[in-house]
Length: 517
Ligand SMILES: [Zn+2]
Image 1 (cartoon, rainbow, N blue to C red):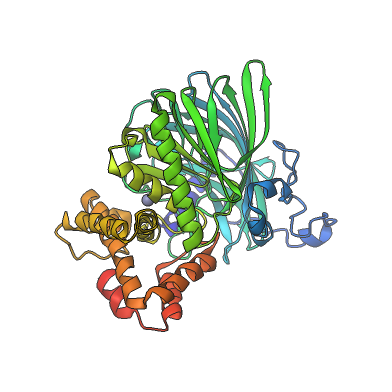
Image 2: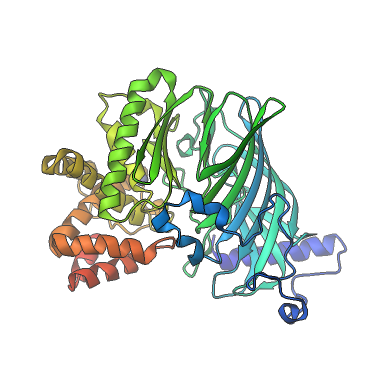
């Protein structure tokens, strides 16, 4: 669904709702925005805050106070906290039930319109509704007052209507209560959201503001049940969760508080800058950890998989070392790898990667491939974002190339070649089909998605390296990461950075491999 249609359907429904309810306000003639409100109200101590915004209710920490996030960033990366004044700030308060299948939550978020257009609605994605779970919301407030809302696309889109357009730079605070039912079977989308065999994987399980861009407006589409489902901007999260005692739990970010209360464990995390918040928990988990530079790497798996968990830890450490060198140091003080019942090989989240427990086997070569690949996503997907729905090659294909780098680093040139060959075989599997890399996930069938994005795509970056030369390619890697750090990369942007690095014209190569024909 595109933005124009979604906005018009919201208008229509809101007008209908107003008529049916006998309400006197309609959105067809919105009240004039309070143009003078910045000047007529005494400015707060933080000049960028809109004075009328409600203060946080779920946290004592003011919206603009970034100091709580500082210990989560390694010292050389803490300047990031000054670079993203418009990043959304989420406060979440979760209660997870005894059998880890239900979450009762409260959310408040301060959103800043960082686009260059007025916004007539703020959109939230309720992803559990398209991940075989269920999410309901209630008591939605905009700046402390009730507001009109509408849900669509299998209830996975919640539109919060603005009484007047939110202008560029303007802020709003939205709060709501929500309930999540977590699936207990594998279902669709790789069981990213599931509690199975005593392991709870809590992916995208809060009302989440998607990215807005010039190409598609708000991201409101229902994605295919393969590929990643989120596309979001970098944000900050303060999350408090009440869990049953006896769970071993980790989440994006780092713990800032932990206490026991009436047989429950109450843990608070600060996460950010990150573009999602993920939590994984199990009473069966045991943890191993090791420090690499300024980052602690932790590995979680059920106790009986101790030897395999040690391997996962080693793979993650080697991957971190490889990509720290190739791009820039991983920015956070914590990184976790956790075994879950996902039916994908692995899945990436900011600060945490998960690997399928079915791969936890020393004899299974894909165990190492998947772990290295998912850790590689911390650089591309997490820090450098992209539209994973319409341009999945940007993070997946580059991360496949980075998996070759990992094997080159750990096993030497033969390791690199072997991984390249295995990616070529993925492409061979669909007869080396001449399908471009830069298509939306939905344009490929599942076999093509694997063969092109994960096969042809990794091979493309190897070809790009050969055409550019090793030195220019190494410069491109670092320049591309820095150019789009914390932001959203594009295909044209990637090509421009590469061409600047090699001082060469890469158009023929992109026409042959990348661009839609
Ligand atoms: Zn991936």
